[in-house]
Image 1: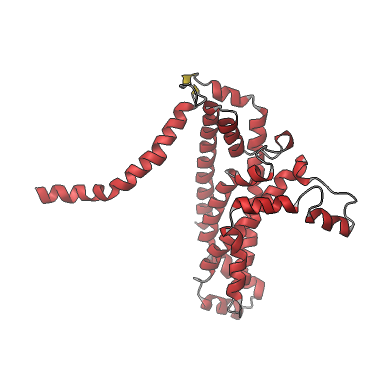
Image 2: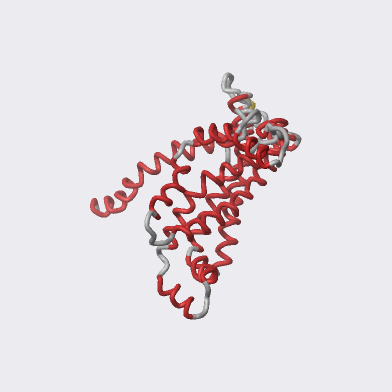
Length: 292
């Protein structure tokens, strides 16, 4: 009897540390944020229940809708980064002298801190005399410097470029690992069938790395929806002129930690949770149907 009880209890004992960790750092914060979203809470005072007032406020908050729109626009990063990282992985999937150096070179932005990269990009797009302005003036494209980081039309595209530059190396490694698992016999068969260099990648490489594409599509799109560091650094924690660079996560942070509206920020967090969860489910289902 004791042996039977222990055989049933033992698996749960092994799971207990992970379950406790998830309960403390995932389940409890999720429940707490859900509760705070129905309260007026500013950290300094106890939460006061207000019902659906925070969610009603969201419906009439123009900055929230602008931030949400910017977050969806940011999803353009996902197909761009997939195409570039696949092309880079194919280019570096060769046995050439010094190829490891180039693989390391393209991976350096991944291991470099986002703050350091953000400061570097601020220098590049400096309005008074940054290298980008200098190059454009030298080429004759513009006559006087453009203050890129204070122009509403430039904030979001610059942040998206920064995200792409930081992420291409990471996703390149994923695709490179997937490419190296494809048998060389398949490429030989494609060449025998008359495929040229580009056709063999289209008919062999792309189908062979489809699981990796699914994985990258999901995690990169979620990362795009939750972008924060780029906006925070490039706009000096302001969100840009007229909130032109504000995203939903940045606006959540601003409400919670800058304006001390924790209850309202919690409502934004719950909306973000629903959006990301729905987006992940739809994305995975659509990609699974393509595989079928």
